[in-house]
Image (cartoon, rainbow, N blue to C red):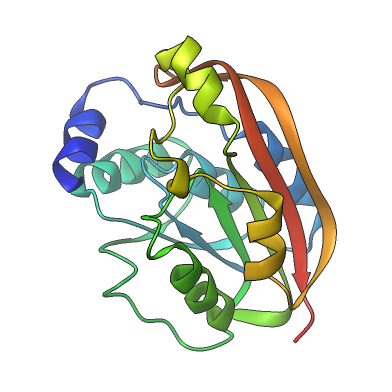
Amino acid sequence: MQQKWDERYKEPEFAYGKSPNLFFKEWLPTFKPGAILMPADGEGRNGVFAAQQGWKVTSFDFSIEGQSKALQLAKENDVALAYIVGDLDDLSFDQEAFDAIGLIYAHFAAEKKSIFHRKLNEYLKPGGIIILEAFSRKHLHFNGLDPRVGGPKEIDMLYSKEEITADFSNYEILMLTEEEIQLNEGKYHIGKGAVIRFVGRKIS
């Protein structure tokens, strides 16, 4: 898996473009800047946007090529990122260290998904925000029609609204929808897809 992402991010162009995800771009500025954790931040397009909005950004991904591109993008935009290369299995942050977490197409192995969500929850302060956009289970249909839209091909790596409510049961739901959208993010997210969009505030 790491080799796949290193190869993708080693390409000269940015795999998903340099612009932030539109849902993340819409929602993040509605909250007061603080410290934000960006798991699976890849080439940094969303972490860099957060830094431009005044957030103190900690990004991580298991691709060193992704880190290199992200730091390049941060330099182009005159912002700073703390970018760690590693797997969530191996990383540890202080409890309640972050005011927000951005989960943008952060798809985890089926057996680890809920475990990782609980781990991330520990790093978020009460009152903190999660902004999540990821492919839903219905996305397999669209991926089959046009593989250019991207996304995992294993259904258990995809999301459902029920799974979100179960994994983030201690959150006030500000938004939770399943939508069909048109993606135009770089080379690997092009076309119609089905996504889950979630914004939640941690209650306890």
